[in-house]
Image (tube, rainbow, N blue to C red; front, side):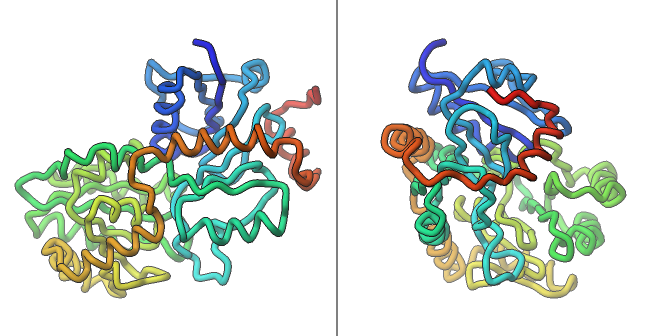
Length: 350
């Protein structure tokens, strides 16, 4: 394969479903993509996907751009560093400034999703002057809108998908294990359990796995959360994870437990006893709620033509043509860079 070369940097498992639509767009151009997977991150690559196993292989591959869904990347990798985000900014920590807008000095390009992210990043671009911002839409959701003809994969019984953030004091996973267990035994509902890959409470994870082993109507999902999984559910039960927006993009309601930034687009509850009733209400799809959901998701993701990944690649082309080498230098970040080189055990500087 000839043409431009691109690299996907994967440090957490949610990256696969984010980057694969981008890979499809690269292939459609006749160009090449490869994956570099950090140690400790599960390898879910398919047989038709190219993996680079060492840092030296990355250096030899010499990509023109590196796409990153996470918060960091090896600064010494060749190519323009492109942030493509791992979710939507939903202010889940109740701070005056959302962590989604933290600038750490790694990226040349930020590909924002919509009104909720672009405006703030344009302010930051003007402030720092060493990166460019392009509103492209989120590459992950291309697959959501390219399959308009395919509706929900429904079963005879309603299906609830439960997803939880990993953030301490915000995650509902410790509180809702017993609620879900009770409802799985008492209600004719199917359940899909998917926990954030950063949750490191081994005993709690095993409790949820056991719940699936002991109940035929409960499935524990070990793989990525993609459109195929979300389409199987009628309602989501969650807390303050950005996956809420993804689910609502499919025109489906969400019940949240102690959401840190609730609004009229959610059915938010504060006590375990309220969960069952809220799920019943969500399954009825109230007309007013569904209208609020549409308005809220348009604020985050107005780009619904299935071409977000193409716009990301066009943004990279524009940056290389018009801005590369012409902006203010990135901050030195010497200590951070030194620690990253120690982590990578890579000390070549040419």
